[in-house]
Length: 111
Length: 112
Image (cartoon, rainbow over all chains, first blue to last red; front, side, top):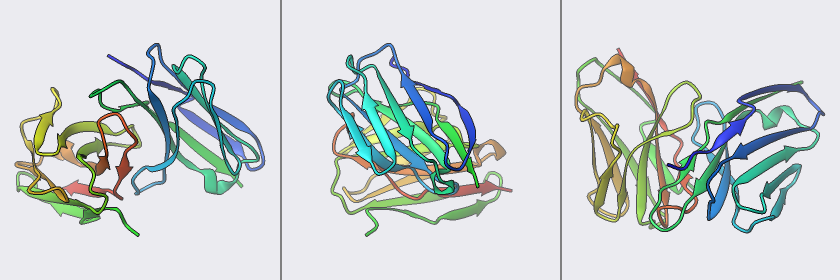
């Protein structure tokens, strides 16, 4: 069974600080997605990474896929209150294997 | 433009009274999923359809059923809701089983 572990599970920081969220597994994934979910809404896809070592940037968010495609990180620079939410990573396996979700990181950015 | 639409956004039902949640998509994706999400936990997959093929997760209670009459629509039926079934229910679609999922806004179910 493929598992994804996210850390930390909860993070509360002040506006303007930097942070990194991790998504780790012992399994290899063909792709990995990051989603952000705001209270009362469905998750929204932020990015998909597919190549080992790949780095993608989305404004102040930087996503990296590990060289071995077993882990990923999300780095936020100069966090803003609008970044508050539940961040979920999800891994796609091979063939007909379904998406596996991490348990999520609840991020709170305090003004 | 909304691509995955769930109705209603909020649903209140009585204990034991059957309830149906609906999901529609304009993406023409092969796969449609239903997830249950409680208290800011990660979404928990209940079942999915790959085209017309239905796949139930092993730990999904029999109380939960689903129908997919065509590519665009999928329904979640809860035959006898219990208090423990109160949750956010999320519908999602994807082109394949292991590709990125596109979620609807969810239906918040309250059982009274």
